[in-house]
Length: 270
Image (cartoon, rainbow, N blue to C red; front, side):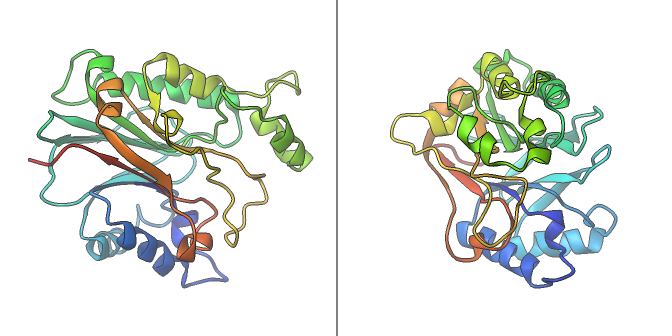
């Protein structure tokens, strides 16, 4: 499961939002959880531990260069073989965790790419690809390994027409998703990850592509019905993937401005 929880669940006008975020996660009960926008949780370790305890998971946190931390949480009995941030100046951050499974080591990356610059997002994607290739004890070629990249990539995909949704954005937000010519939609980041061998799990037969922002009650003036959150897997892991979905309805409509994404895989922790 991946979830951008919007400023760590901290809103001056809505102190109950973090509780709704946790309700959404508890209902889904993921074995591996990627979280983004963990404002206040890096310095306040007690608060992070409280969140992890409520979820019954172990947290692995990575700070950002300018923005907010990200994390990967793992539910016992998952055995973590390695855990360390991708050491590059991401705007937000990237955490890399390697978990032992019956199919071999599973590398999980949680990230949140630069929201303002397509050029920066493309550079960050290159750092993620390099970071996935150097993940812990599993050092084989990237296309032959089990790697899952999850998070808010703040990027539009190259397989969909986006002119209408770009047109609905306020003028001040359109530049985030356009090339320097101010006209062409910037899809370079997802295209680069695709060329590196990552499979978009929502492009498989029988899976419905859905927007991930904004939610109906969580704000998000910078969005216009867009898919910015992704579950990307290397081919061996994609072959083990079952159902995947965007979680909508109930508390998910107001807990954040992003909907969470969930995928199931035919593998078990060892």
